[in-house]
Length: 167
Image: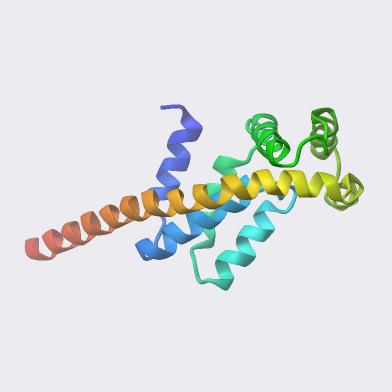
């Protein structure tokens, strides 16, 4: 297992909280990072997880796994294709690619201006593609991670009970 993947896996299994809180945080981070919300992924994930009392660390870890410099181009390309399928010929891929390259080179406040310059057609096409993918991805993330965190919870309880018997 590559070192970064193992590190993130260990971070996930060491998170504390209820299975629901952890899974909800993961689902929110996944959904927000799939929707084209750069450069606001982390901020939106943090605010929304705190509002619904989900685990913000799980959300931020999930958002980082889904949306990172290795995934930006293929991720946004897929969202554009889906959005363009439902709203054809409103946005070219060249415009998105230029935006993504500029986004990696600018400071945060300049990124806000860059997003503002994109225009309404860009936002509508990309958000359409993003929502079509983000909603089911968030639901699936919740289902899978709830099962994962619940099994960890049971294993911790069992270990705790075994440790109590030994003393």
